Length: 338
Image 1 (cartoon, helix red, strand yellow):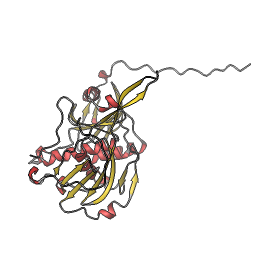
Image 2 (cartoon, one colour; image 1 turned 90 degrees about the horizontal axis):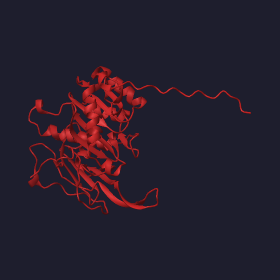
Image 3 (cartoon, rainbow, N blue to C red; image 1 turned 180 degrees about the horizontal axis):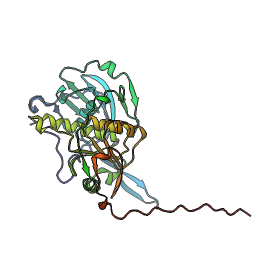
C-alpha cells in the first residue's frame, strides 16, 4: 500500500538511514510505481528509493594514524519530465522523490502538487522519471534561460530570479526571542549526518519552536527543495483548506547563508520567517526587505542578528544574558624603528 516516506523515530522527521549499496548508474528511465500502490485520489504516486547517506573510508590523521571515517554520499540524479531530460542534481539521496517535487515547485515549472501524476526514482540507473497529468506548458522556452546561482556546486535556476516576486504576499506571523532560542537549541540537539560525517547542509521547518521536518543534503538548495516537496505532499493529503500546510506559523531554518534564491524559495513556500546559522548577502537582504520577510542570521547559542522584518520578531532582551563586553582594539605602535 502506498504511503508517505517513512521517518525513523527518535531521529527527527526527515533524518533517514537506508541500507542500499552504491553502484554504477547506467542511463535508462525507471519504470512507474505499481498501480497497486495508488495513493489517495489526485495525490502523486511516489516511490521510496533509498540510498546510504554516508560511506566509510580510510584516512590519515595529524599523527600519521590510519583511521576509518565517514563521509557523506554524493550521487547524480538525472530528472526526466515526461521523458524529457531536464536537469541532473547532485544529492545526498535521502528523500529524492520529495527533492524532485520541491525542485519543480521552486523552479515554478508546476503550479500545484496535483499537476504531478507520479515520481519514480531508481538509483540503479540514477534517474527520476516524472509523469505529469497534462504536461508543462512551454517547457522548452521556460527552461531555455539558466541563471547560475551561489548554491554549493554551482546550481542553476530557470528563468528570471525576480519574476513574479511582486505577486508574493507573505502572511502575518511573529516569532518570539524565546521561540528563536528553542529553534537554535533543537538544531543543536538534532542527530544528523553532519555530526557523523560533516560536509552537508541542514534545513528544517518549524511550527513555533517545534520541528516538523529536518533534511540534510550536499547543498542547501536541495534541502529547501526537499522541504518544499514535503509541504506539498502534506497539502495533498488534506481534505479542507483549514488543514493545509500554511506558512502563517512556520519558520524555515538553514545552516547555509541567506542568498536571494533562499529568501525567494522560502517566500514561495509561504514561510515569512527564516533563520540561519550563517549570514545574509546583499541581494538576499534587498529581497527580504522588499517582501517584508523576517531574516535572522548568525543564530548560535543566544546570539543572533535580525537583518530585516524586525517587526515580526518579538524581542525579549532579558533572555540574552549579560551583554558582551566589546574588546578594545590594541593601539598600533607609534615607536619608530631604530
